[in-house]
Length: 511
Ligand code: FAD
Ligand code: DLZ
Ligand code: SF4
Image 1 (cartoon, helix red, strand yellow):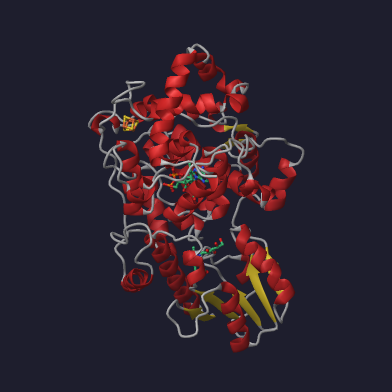
Image 2: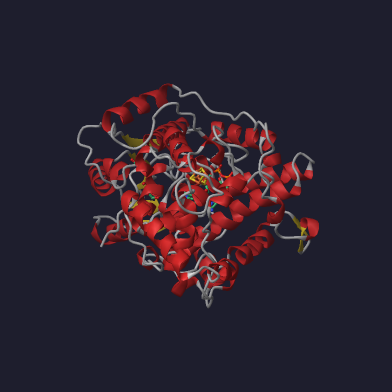
């Protein structure tokens, strides 16, 4: 039976389920660069370049193994610009007996594929994506009957399932989680390790020129482009991370520093999410470093928790809760996204730093995403959909299955606490403690209100005031609300006035 196998831009894995029983003599692998995928949100230029270049390299790799690949480039004549249009054209070219695809990473594309089963002239088989530690069904079974999901309990299941850092039935080191050790700020004068970036080869250079021609107005800088676009380079990036940065991953996981875009983070999510690496490869490499005494337990456990804990957890939650998940707005947040999220031009030095890094690299590390750009959007009451679109398009690693729960649930608390037990709201003091950003800012984190006050301060208290009805009884918010309840009515009114005046200027209320 002749089979057409469609491989998407984030499915660049040799062991992909849709390629499992490939017959080189008869089958055709279809890969398509389509405008619709680059523009349904206007992705960062580097993200489009990453995906197109990695797709082209992957296609070359398959051809090298004798596979027939039908690769449609963005500029090929007749390119219809969509998955569906390109699939239909390919059906006419190849006349296969059936189509096989692996399920996609986004609900939007999943709906398309389900429709194809009804509307395409040949049978369309959709296979499970088995590149995750937990299947969608496994997560559903775990989630059944729970009103809220907590990563920590799911993570323990994943530790048991994989055997990572396990000594029999018990966690290595006697604890499941060493997070309490992972909140250090950087010592003065500290220089993080130099990171491995990759010079664009001829294929990438061609793609970079194409992206500049077709998407010149998209967010972000195209150069310097340093992401790995092949499995071989992704493996080098993994080795390099383990050798130079994993050791400090735990200690400095929450730290931020001016001019240092990467610190001890892995920089592997872009390669991992498009399939150049697998989650277990990352975890086994980290575990090996611990067993060989090259990295401490707090770093290795922390890293493994991000990969088999958070990453698997948000994916399971996404598929279990969509499509309704995206529609909730538990805190009734309605403001517009401030313009400076697009330009980086703001006097708030922390936001300027994180947004500039995002433009430069299509990357910001977790704590910048959560506690600076995310925290500001939460405190400002930006409409979830606006901030979600921003996160989905600005980061090279952003695909909805992982972006949405992180933004909607972890940052915006728009799911009312399904994912997190409380919002990660913080005032300027937190950013000051974990970074050196405030030293270069025209505002002062120690000033609570009035001229010169860090805007995060009135915004933080205003957030608590505005959401007292929804959050005031949350046991994990007891301390801030105890403090708020000591405020006089005048002070509350003054905070609300100050915060509202600031927000009306940068983030007008909508609807
Ligand atoms: P490291 O900090 O070194 O972590 C190691 C690995 O753990 C990452 O490569 C990633 O695969 C995984 N990981 C860590 N934290 C998370 C998490 N919360 N959820 C899922 N996986 C995690 N991650 C994405 O992959 N795509 C996204 O679109 C995305 N959007 C985010 C949006 C917000 C608001 C926040 C707070 C986090 C988001 N994350 C997202 C999670 C995390 O910030 C990134 O995975 C991480 O910054 C990627 O960089 P790294 O490879 O250097 O990760
Ligand atoms: C993100 C992206 C972009 C920019 N372009 C393409 C493309 O041209 N062809 C393709 O197959 N995939 C692309 N992708 C990735 C898809 O958007 C992704 O596969 C779906 O969103 C499902 O996760
Ligand atoms: Fe950010 Fe406030 Fe610090 Fe300025 S003072 S960098 S706005 S936290």
